Length: 76
Image 1 (spheres, rainbow, N blue to C red):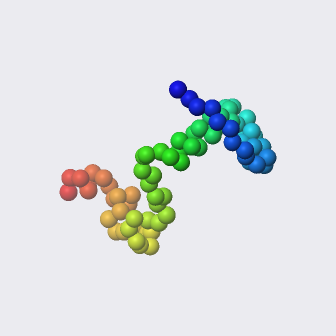
Image 2 (image 1 turned 30 degrees about the vertical axis):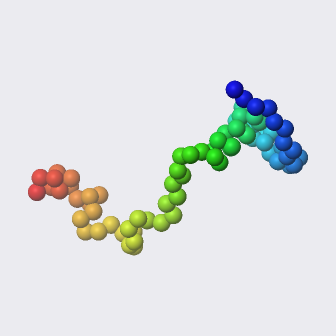
């Protein structure tokens, strides 16, 4: 079941929606429903990772697997 409603949106926002819908080959209705579902989703959103999980210089250490033979690491 669905409910019909009317909302007033600014002209520039409508034009942006219209162009986005045309670019994605979908309807404005579909874009609006996806945006509302995304905003009110009960699923917890994760925070983006903005820095490395382990602080450091970013240089490989002496036992970096890229520099070693994997056979030697597994069977030594």
